[in-house]
Image (cartoon, rainbow, N blue to C red):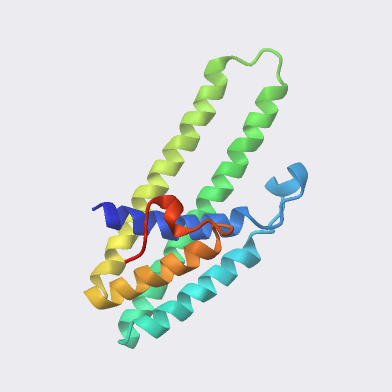
Length: 164
């Protein structure tokens, strides 16, 4: 279960980091769509990884559809978070805002994140069911390699991993 959770989180991190690490310029990042190109590049890399790993074309298509659904879920969550951050900025400007006002928005952010996480976890299991154990292992290695490119040079040993 720990490995499964790590794989889901890894895919999510790749997608979120791709969107989060691109195109930020000051406070304007909430309104810009600068992460789209990075997400598309990551999706293209996942498509290539799936095509080279999953031998059955129907299963590969299913896996690609699942990845696209995960990307869609991450995009929806990002949009929701941007809107809620805007609400926080507006609330912060109000002199008479109460802690409860802020907590209501923060609770909504947490609820959105948990809902997206549960959806992504369900999608992960759908994908796993459609591929063989060997294909899953190869996909996991490919994701690990992709994740390491987004870690800005942090060695695997920093996570306490010395190789497989």
